[in-house]
Length: 221
Image (cartoon, rainbow, N blue to C red; front, side, top):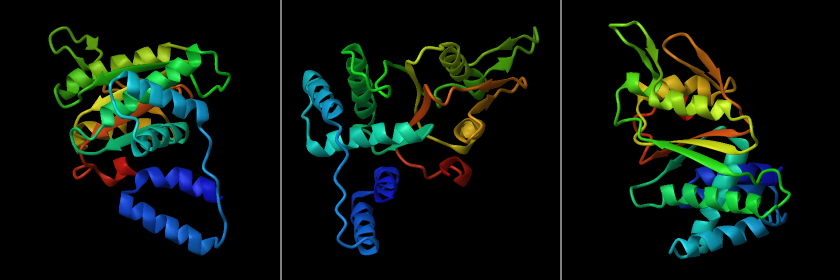
């Protein structure tokens, strides 16, 4: 029970909140020592990828990458929140490379699969270019960038992981269309009435944002 509470909540907290959370848990369950999960081969591969890419394998950063892995295992949509240059993109990229290397090495863990990343900036294009729109002259439907990438991920029926990474600010204009994707339905509803059912086993939605100041409560929850 403690491990479930810890693994699902700790990645969400700031450093000072994490200390408070640990203190509350220790008050509720006095004297109980919970050993950390052993991610031996994953952690080792993460460190190798970081060093190969020219980064330092600081323990705190490796922990963040492991926490991202844990969160992706239990959540369909994940937000990496932090300032520009804080290491969000590299955190996602390092985990993707590490999981791919473990799969190629023949490790038996079924959570270690090859990862395909589809990265886009949702704020650099119009809504019609993101989710698709009708051509007003020919009345033909044309898929948008986001819907095309999601459709490509759905059509790939292999066990490979497909991560769609929205690298840009979250606001109520474009993210509201994703609410049905991020809830238990895992379905993208397009303006033409089409519904694309995503595979919750192999697909993940990842958002890289500086803050959630203008995100609606529905999106955050």
